[in-house]
Image (cartoon, rainbow, N blue to C red; front, side, top):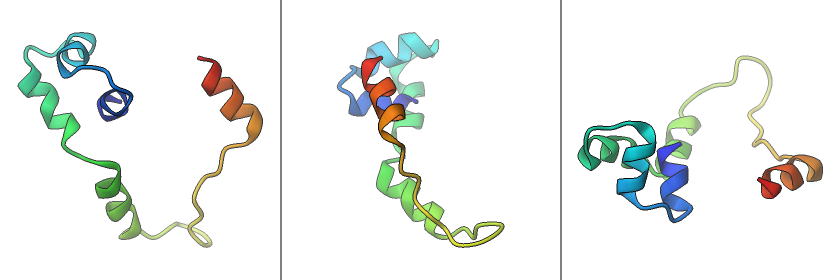
Length: 68
C-alpha cells in the first residue's frame, strides 16, 4: 500500500502519517520494494495448479477503480 501511494505521488511524510508510523524512516522500510522486485520474487514461485497467468482486470473493474 505504501509503495502504491508513493508511486501515485503522495509525499513520504504524508504516507507515514496515514499509516501511523512514528517517523518517515519507519515508512521507508515498506517503500524499498519496487514492483520489479516483487515481480522477480513472484517469478521464483510455482502456482499450485496449472500455469502462471498475469491477472488482467476487466473493463468494469478498471472503471470502478478509476472512479475512486
